[in-house]
Amino acid sequence: MIFEKVKERISDILGVDADEVTMESSFMDDLGADSLDVVELIMALEEEFEIEIPDEEAEKIQTVGDVVEYIKEHTDM
Amino acid sequence: MKLKNRIALITGASTGIGRAIAMKYAQEGAHVIINYIGNQSVAEEAVEEIKGLGGSAEMYKCDISSYSEVENMVDELVAKHGKIDILVNNAGITKDSLVMRMSIEDFQKVIDINLNGTFNTIKALSRYMLKERQGKIINIASVVGITGNAGQANYAASKAGVIALTKSVAKEFATRNINVNAIAPGYIQTKMTDVLNEKVKEEILSRIPMKTIGSPEDIAKTALFLASEDSNYITGQVINVDGGMVM
Image (cartoon, rainbow over all chains, first blue to last red; front, side, top):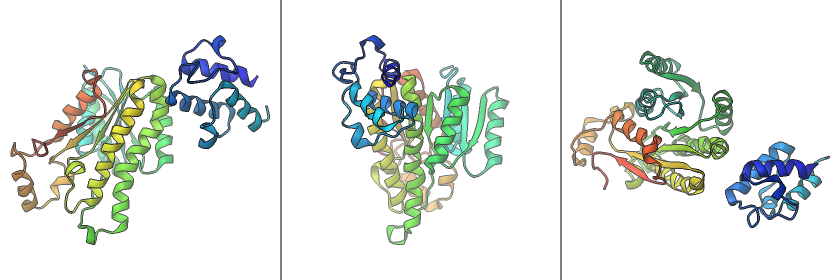
């Protein structure tokens, strides 16, 4: 469920096909994101899931799985 | 018309340079939002003047030195118009005195409005502009932000800050088709310079190769260029509009 929502946002913001997005996809290496894309994406996900991802945590996020895990740990979903 | 269907937010636009830019943009087809803080009747007058000439304008009161106020303003305006294409950070104040006599408060206040205010509007608008993948940000700096000026440590520092902010944001937003440039006015006839005494005015004029004072209209013309498609390949630049005062 979380993955589905995250996938949708990624596809939105990065302009990639949702089917291309897997848990293992690296934002920068596989999905063609630059640093600004990642910031945009994190802000969009913060809004969507009503959480706050601190900068030191955001820096660790490399793959789709990283962000899905973080959201899982910090929401009741 | 160079700005047809564009939405432009101009801070400190009820008088002086900001008002001239608002008029110019409205004449070129933009819908103009006149941000002001103090004088509502003057802001109303500016809106009426634009409407009288067949343009489109509204006003919005907001203290740009407060981030929460700026965020509210930008969120509301984007909700209403769907986007803001052009941001002109024009609002600025002076509180001149020599450093030895300058109060901490007077230093802080000028930085709060001129520099922090510019950061606040850019930050609040950035998420929307980035999403649009297009935009024009024009920051009004000053030639004293390049040269420094005795009696204006606070103002000069704030404007130097605006220039470095302009270049940094230009680098960050360049891949998103957002142009960020600054205009550095020299000696321009406004309320801000009307208060200078005659001796100071003469002294400034003697340092201007063109030997004349500039008008808000001169700045507005450059601001139009930077807001239009004519400047699409220009970003991170500071354009001095100063009669050759600083080269």
